Image (cartoon, rainbow, N blue to C red; front, side, top):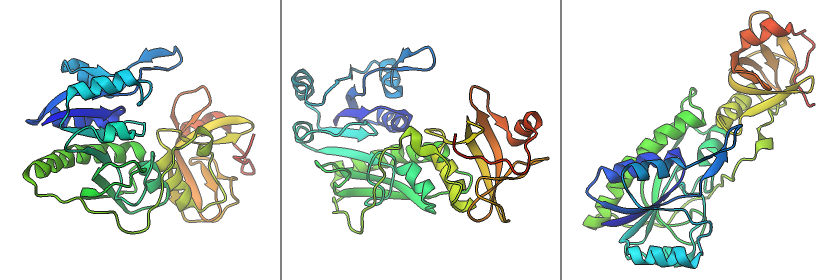
Length: 307
């Protein structure tokens, strides 16, 4: 089948790679415009664009989904099916109705749970024990289309959003190929979503502030879910510090207060203790909790708190 692929970040790369390794014909890739990144603000292409260019595939980067020139070009491509994986914009009706086989989305949750832009992060933050990938037929709603296939995976205590995201991306690639094959064979039937939906709105930078009044377990989930972006953070004497890896422990302490600072950085919570394994002070490199303590000599009554 002639396929136009919509996708932008690293999560979409395994799905595109799987399509390119299949017998399907990827005739074009649609991705977000290049963005400036890093301290030097260098204009950088999305990961999906880099893969497409290496394979000599036509790349479209419309600023608007309703751009008449883009819609005309998409129409002239005559795709049999459109595949969407973490593209980053809602497709309008003019695009959804174009391919005769419809538009398929690869979504990183077990729908109807975690509809929205950040399903991986919120599943970890909320302490879910499992998640997965759903392929579905797209409609004009936010991840409300009929389900085609689903595949589950456990969420391990060692998972953060990056690790889990990589695993789900690989699952998504294989599930996409299976979905397309079953569509061609007529062996899959779109099924309406059932159950109570939940939502995973985009994360904002300021939402990474650590809520020390919560339990140690909740804070551990929070830190894992926020990594690598926007990253959990707190303040120490007005200095912003990113907390990248922690371990929840039993014990008693005051929320946000340093409870031990000789060999291990322990911080009190609403229930239990947090052992800080890795952190990054403002303007400095990532370091272990022990390395941080060597240069700080924190007193027990020090608080990680607001600026």
